[in-house]
Length: 395
Ligand SMILES: *Cc1c(COP(=O)(O)O)cnc(C)c1O
Image: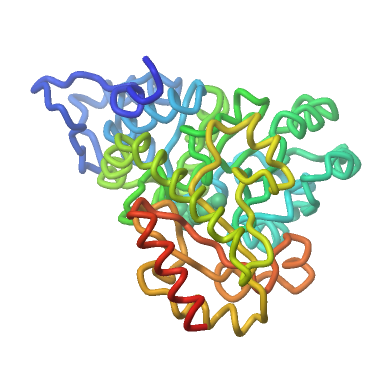
């Protein structure tokens, strides 16, 4: 099955009525015919047998349909869906890290991921270092005997920095074959990039973004080997975080994924046009878009992504306050956090999603005070450029 077909059909199982859409099993619990059956079903579930359900925190048929589809899309053996992207990331950490372990992470990260690593994990005795993953030598020197997880994004939130997934995975595994390389693939989606094929061990997603695609659902997932996903499901989600996805949300994400190919094509086309428009503007000092030849890792993006995606970051000429005036002047492009929906959104990381970063952390992550991040939607690009133009004219 080709990729565009997989988005609609991968992992689908015919049900007794032949319903074309996935039924939503809005049930927390699944009855047994006898106590004996309860014991055999529980044993089956814990040994990883498919198609057995007892309680939705352990698994649900609607969630399982989404998990089968994501495993195919990410070229992994298995997947588990979670309540949110942060639910996925925290569950990975609580499953595989122990007191005294070391986590090596990139400086440019989703704001709440950074907070989870910097504050929550540190509180439980995990050693955490943040270094620039664009410097492979620095990554190599920062690995320690107790490093258990190497974590990064590519492209990164919010700067659109691109990290070389194959190179960093190879460095981590040469240091210690047991290190788990975990990639947040939210910005690219499995449609544009498959980190497991490049050497990573686990992929996490915020399904809230492009996979859901319509800004109407919060969700996440983790993709990896069958053995790792079993541990995550039964040690991480079942007993530790409880970050289980609601079946209604699994339905919405399945519906979103069905149109990912056509949405992503338009996101990429519009983002490319907006990036080139901004590059020509005298009001802009730099544009960060992996599809531009001027992007420092353009060649890496070209090698590991099928297309450069729908996110653009731009540094404006002028001051922090002038940037805020420009952003406040946009009318069609809404001021909001989140990304990956059909509608265009803009945000100002230094005062919004990354306001918890210290000035030194902002600098290390490459987040200038005048940086704005645009999630380019699938509207007519002329209307989007018109909105940017009127905001420049009035600021
Ligand atoms: C949004 C986002 C997250 C967090 O996901 P939630 O679904 O909001 O919990 C993590 N990583 C990246 C790159 C994101 O964009």
